[in-house]
Length: 68
Image (cartoon, one colour):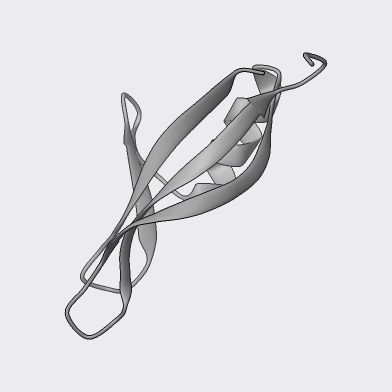
């Protein structure tokens, strides 16, 4: 199976964003764009947790559809 990992970072406002060529995207926008390319969202993995235990950065995991 082929997986793609997309990094999401937390803004000072507390919301998460993904850097792309089009600028900053929200996680739902990334899920929609990846679905158009034949990938499905399967989950996320924490990458960085701040000093006070808050999630600061995570990887969104996408799997290629139709491939086993």
